[in-house]
Image (cartoon, rainbow, N blue to C red; front, side, top):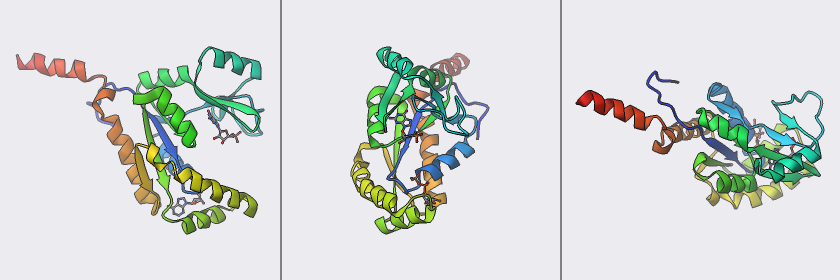
Length: 215
Ligand code: ADP
Ligand code: 5GP
């Protein structure tokens, strides 16, 4: 919902993390669908070869290793990591330009990514951690999703316990019991954070016009 009196504002970096299976992808999709104009997924740069069906600039920016290393040298990434032999990074300029234009970015990262982004981008970051209502339900969701073998599910369950232990590094924690209730809470967080005074960059000018009318 937009308001004709919306003032210029700085966008925010909205981090969603959760143990695998707790519902991060589901909530992220719902948020992106509900906020198509203001919120978009952050697009990373990677050295991984493009998979069939992937689109340059939508899924990733695909690049050569030398070019990626040069970007690291230039401090062009807000954060980067090597995963399974390929490098992935969040391009700083693209995010900063978008934030200046009042656009918000969604980050689907683990606790280490969340920690790095929070350290590097401080005031621009809002982090939300989703918890499952119980371990038994997490197990049920991982089985119910039907995308992984039993062995992979066991690995995800073991890692989930480690991931859960980092809950206290986040700004907000939401238990994903009922999907619609959880989605509403997460969207409320996004809407409230947009109203933070330091993000409403148009306030100085706006309050000046109010004062001018007063005299
Ligand atoms: P993640 O991205 O955190 O690994 P997903 O979003 O893929 O998790 O969710 C895992 C499975 O659980 C999916 O099949 C999804 O449809 C289901 N799911 C997500 N949230 C809920 C919920 N609140 N209640 C029941 N099932 C859910
Ligand atoms: P995939 O190659 O399957 O698309 O992604 C492999 C892994 O890289 C996933 O765990 C994904 O979260 C991680 N990844 C993707 N982009 C980035 C990024 O910009 N930074 C970091 N740290 N990890 C990323």
